[in-house]
Amino acid sequence: MDYSKYVRKGGAWAKGPRPQRPNRVWLADITYIATGEGWLHLAVILDLFTRKVVGWAMRDHRRAALTIAALTMAIQRRRPGAGLIHHSDRGSQYAAGDYRDILRGRLHHPIDEPQGKLLG
Image 1 (cartoon, one colour):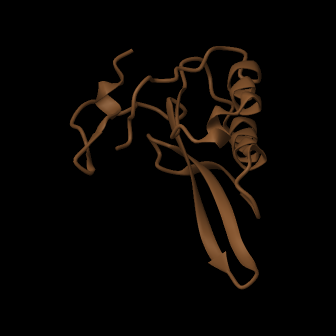
Image 2 (cartoon, rainbow, N blue to C red):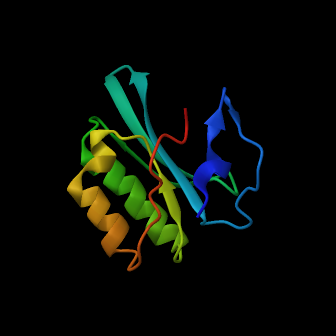
């Protein structure tokens, strides 16, 4: 598959075909929110076609359990089929063995994991 159509260049998406239906490309990221009780960490998985959140989780830490909870929600809610492209940064939460095992094992088919940096 040609992943170059999803490459972000200079702060804007490169021109090219977009996914033609939901559950073809998921983007995952973590952010944090200041609260009166400290930092709240939010992991989100977005569907590139619908631009909707398909999975999310909040915790008081940034360990792999945070991203695993968001991924589990996305899988349970959307039940993606073969060929799903999952993209995240190369943070330890996404590189954790348990997270990658879920990508491979619970979906019962390989996930396309593009090589290289897709989101500038």
